[in-house]
Amino acid sequence: MTGAAHPISPQGQRLDEAAAAWLARRHEGLGPREEEAFLAWLGADPVHKQAYDRLAHGWAALDAMAAVPRISALRSEALVAHPPRRRLSAQWAAIAAMLLLAFIIGVGLFARPDRLGPDDARTAAAAAPRDLRTVKGERSTMMLADGSTITLNTDTRVRIAFAPAERRVILLAGQAYFEVAQDKARPFVVGAGDREVVALGTAFEVRFDRAKVAVALVEGKVKVRPRTDVETGSGASAAAELKPGEQLVFALNSPATSIRAADVANLTRWREGQVRFDAAPLAEAVAEMNRYSMMPIVIEDPRLAAMQVSGVFQTGQSRNFVAALTELFPVAAETTETEIQLRKRDAS
View 1 (cartoon, rainbow, N blue to C red):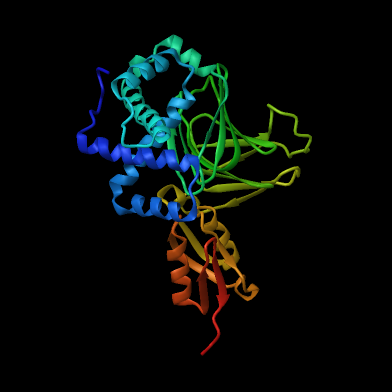
View 2: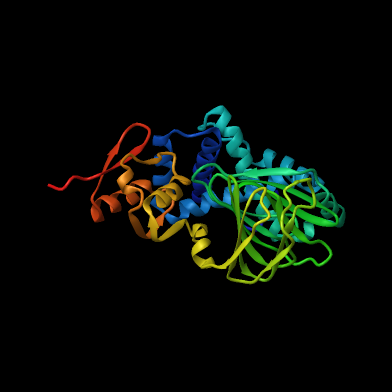
């Protein structure tokens, strides 16, 4: 393929192949020990994470824009130029080749926007809805067809449903951060539960946990209102506008809405792979850490649930979190094949 913006060196290609293999295996599903091996590989060198995120980005972008004719042509070119490597298993090799292809297309297309013509842009705008997702412990940032970016946190699913008059994204589960490209003619709308967030050019996050949704505004201005694309029947309250540094929280099927000041930098710390607790009950802290790990932490002794925890911890590093607990508090931990159990340590 000609005109590539960033040729891949042999060393870089080997790294991308390893990242592609891990991404393929994670989408197939990993056990607790395999997940630990992946996290160890990811944390061994910053370039590992960069390669993994780069390929995840390209894969998501390829899937989201598959209806564009030029994308289909580039896909065919890249498959001929970069056939699967034999050293991977047959199934993983095919998936890894597509992941490498997605990166090549992502770099070539987004570095050269002139390659996406007006007809392609209109096709992308009216493309059929596409679902994007991350698995537990995964985080992925991708560029949408309009130039906006979306970062998906662990175990998150979204549906992209762009149309000529509206850019709509539906958060089906999880947590996502949006940086919206300004387009006054096409509002950017994020639906979650029975409400939707309307923005023109701004940055905000939405978290959808079972029966509760939280919207935090980082910059710009957004309006939260009842959904207009589906019948909710919830009697949701009238529209409310947020200012930077505010968070709006509501329960599903309830008109009640709460707006409060929030530390949005702390709320969005997950984008750097961190969580911060300020005198949080251990039960709450454990629930948050479990969002990112295949090896859950279980509080076996109810006397520990209300114990207050403070500190900054790496997402997906449950063992390090537990090690800190046992070092600083009267907590004992026991690891089984499937979970890490916490009990109150008896005074000796």
